[in-house]
Every structure is written in C-alpha cells, then in structure tokens.
Image 1 (cartoon, rainbow, N blue to C red):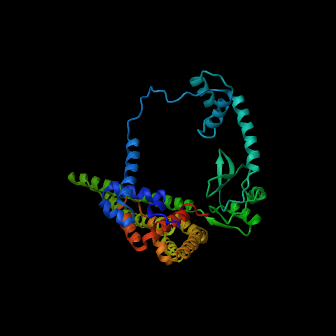
Image 2: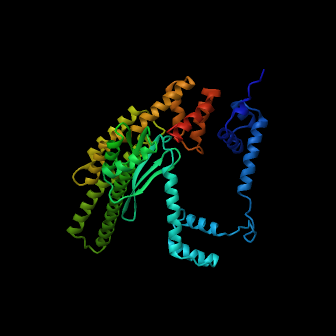
Image 3: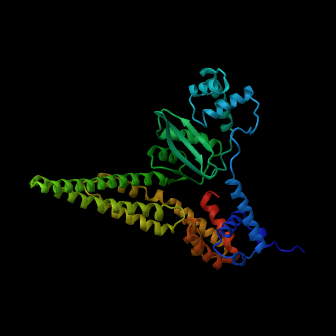
Length: 415
C-alpha cells in the first residue's frame, strides 16, 4: 500500500517561492510559518537557503570585462543568420547591417545581398506559416497596424502570442479583412471568440465570414482615449491655475505703485472663474478614469452585473460633465456607451470560468472570487499578505490548488 505524498512534495514552484520570500522577510518565526503551511521547519529552511543562494548569485560581482566568455566560429551560414536577426529583431536598416559588418567584422556586404537573403527567408517562412494548424487557437487578437503609410492586418493567438496573420494590404476594408480571415479558416482557424478595437471594417469583415464568432472589445484603446481626455483637461486646469497666480502677482506689484487697472481686475476675475470650472472637472475625470480602469475593466474584478452598473454610472457622470465647451468628453461618452457590450464581454467569460472552478473545488462562488480579487493587490504589499493569510486559514489545504487554478484562468484566459 502506497503512502500518500506529503504536503511539501505536492507544493508547486510558485508556492515554494512564496514560502522562501516569507522566510527571508522574517515577518514571523519559522516555526509559525511551518505550522501554518503544514510543512516541516527543515523544508522552510531549505526553500529559504535556495532563495538566498539565488540572491547572492544575482548580486555577485560581474566577471572581468577582459575575460573571454566563449569562442564563436564565424561561418557564412552564421553571418546570414545574423542578418536575419539584425533586421527583424533589432529593426536594423539594410545600410545599418552594411556598416556593422564593415566595422565589426571588416567584411563588405552589399545591400542587394541583404535584400535577397531576407526575401529568401521570407518565402521559406511563408510556406511554413501556411502549413500551420490554427485549430488550437481559442482566442484571436486582431488589429490594424502600419508599416509607414501601408496598413498591415495582424492576428495573434492570445495564449501563445503566435502571429498567424501579418499581411500588408492596400486597403483595410471589410472585404480585405474577410478575405484573409477566410485564408486563416482554411488552416483551421475557428476561435471561441476574438478581441479587437472598435474598427468598423475589421468587425464587419469578421461578421461576414465568421458570423457565429463573437468579437469582444479591446479595453486598451478606450482606456487610452479616456486618459488622453483626462490628461488634456488636467493640463488646462494647471494652466488656469498658473494664469491666475501670474495675474495675482502682477496686481500685487501694481498695487505698490498704485497702478492697478480695471482691466487687470477683470482678467483676474475671468481667470478665477476658469480655474474654478476646470480644476474640479479635471479631478472628476481622473477619478472616473481610475474607476473605469481598476474597478470595471480590470481582469480580476467584480461580477459582470456589478461592472455593468459601474460602467453605466461612469457614462451618466460623463454626460453631466461634458457641456458644450468640452466636445472631447461627449465623444468619449458616446464611445463608451456604444462599446459597452463589447468592452465588458470578458467579464462574462471570467464569471463562467470562476463558476467552473467553484464547482470543481466544491466551494462558494464568492470564495473563489475573493481569491481572484487577491491578484489585484501587489505581492509586495502588506495588504496582500494579510488577505493571503486570511484566505489560507479559511481554505487550508485547498488554498494553494485554488490559487493556482485561478492564476491559470487569469493569465491564460483561453484554457
């Protein structure tokens, strides 16, 4: 009869790292830590020693600059491989490659040779790419990027970051997107859903050829738009404050010589009015932006219903703030309202995943969500470890497996 494995043997590397950090921080005695984690003190000391060795190696003095690290045989094949590394990885120009070969290797190479080598490699890569099986991609990330003035259609697998679509085109309309998505579908591309910004042509092209596949919203662009509006008004508010201070200083100097004019007082009154209007507006927008980013669009967050209520509240507050003098706020508010369903689609997926974890561990859904919310805190903060200890006491041996399960869902949303 085989004995059951010990608790220490079943701990993952991530948990062992956490134990080592707590031991090195000396936040509590080793005996307490061992009892809390249900492992031996010897095991805790072992993890701490391993972590200390890694730290010592990281901060050890570097070797002498003149010490030979290794010898590298330079062949023609290696040089051609080096060209392929310089251009796509280092973004080096053709003439930059020529100069590098001349200055470091004392070797002449022509621009045409570099171009021919890259074209040959591109043709080989195209054959390899077209033979790839794309049926394992569950979430596709689509966007339009530019090489100079030329639009490039891009598609990336969310789990592996494999780029299955990177095609320069003349136009980025619905037909073009549909055509290249059809080519991907011929290689087995059939994701559970895709993620993209609000581009009309991109979404229309997918809807035409993949009508059954949902296209979720890309939260980056709306956050960027919101931040641009908030930062612009913040600069205007700061400028209004500076202007008011300048006018007050001018009037103070003029009073010394009894040369204060009605025009100066009038300008100061208008400056104060502008400041009183812009400063609260900028502060309100900053608060709304923080709510949107950290409470509504953060992956580890509340349920879809709560996010929807917060989202609608932000839209209503923006409508109160927009007015005729701030068309950018009105544009932002309309963008948010139009993309509400797409932007919050990820929350519905997350709710389903957390529900599946709760069923798997036979735990209340709220308990699983509390573990999920723990990932919003910084692992170096006291609040993180206080909540970590509370959840560990409540869940005992189920805590670490539950933490790992939630981490997988958060970091790899396609699994």
